[in-house]
Length: 203
Image (spheres, rainbow, N blue to C red):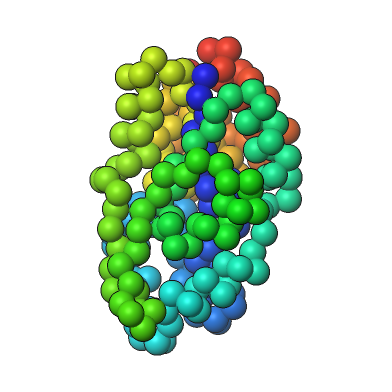
């Protein structure tokens, strides 16, 4: 078995929500839990940052204060003792580095920001379109049994591509739109779901 996990909402808090709370810009609270169209979401975020003259250093300052979710480090250690783990995220390398340090540097596949010399975020570059799903499909082609967990709309293609897909603390709208995935709300439940998924009890 090989485990694939989303990052934000599964192991660490939502970065953009923390930025919204620190800056007082409510519009930045919108995440992939609310907006299925990732490009639309990111274009909106970059426009808001420009409007308020916020750059990469401002966001990194918020990220430096963040810690993994309660129980995340123990869950990740439990999982890594049992199988290889890859984090598949739609975050950006420039955001993720401090959080990866706090999680013990697990393997991370994510995207990259385009940043001007002064720190203004001018755009973003996807590593590959629908990268979470395509990573799972590639791992399956290498004859791994893949069990995946995520919380948002942008995780659902990954969950569908895996042998077993699990939702962790998702919002009600995602649960309603994707009733085929089992829902877990604690790390103990998520551990149990991974055990069941590895045994083929979750399809």
